[in-house]
Amino acid sequence: MSIQKWHPFSELDSLRKEMERLIDEFFPAKGLYTGPVWRKGAEDIAVPSVDMVDRDEEILVSVEMPGVEKDNIEVSLEGDTLTVRGTVKKESEEKEEDYIKRERTYSSFERALRVPVKIDPEKIKAVLRNGILYIHLPKAEEVKPRKIKIDIS
Image 1 (tube, rainbow, N blue to C red):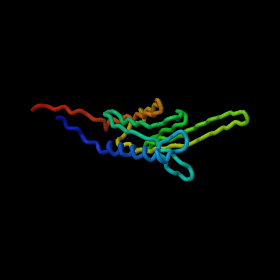
Image 2 (cartoon, rainbow, N blue to C red):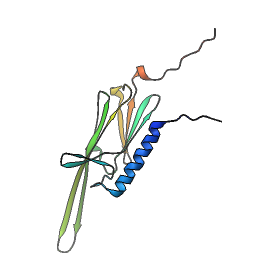
Image 3 (cartoon, helix red, strand yellow):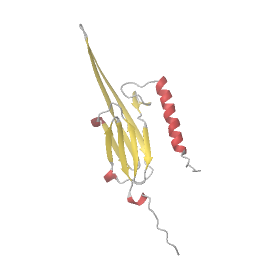
Image 4 (cartoon, helix red, strand yellow):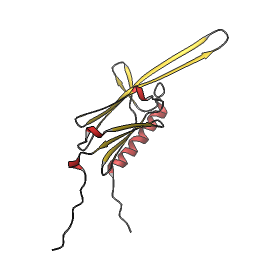
């Protein structure tokens, strides 16, 4: 019989995602982005869904970015706060016999996360693939796990 380690934050994250899904189902956001939204002044700011995984050598952050172009994303690390922000742009055009209809939709998104360990800022890497932004945050040498040799006396 194996004992599995309980991860309360993982369960809370699953609950948060399910609540966001239910809220989105009843109160859909504007534009391409369909995730949760918060008000900032007179505009809606989309809040992308995020996963943060603590690996031995790095923290891996995955941010959902459907329909967002690489040039419209900004990632920054200031102190222990990782911030991902940007803009979603959507343009559409319909042509009929007597009229042309053009629409442009712009919405912004922003997400700030506290990084739980010291990061080596020179080795940070971000990759946008299939609508998901993967941010690799390599741990600083002093916080990486080390194996300790056991001697027999």
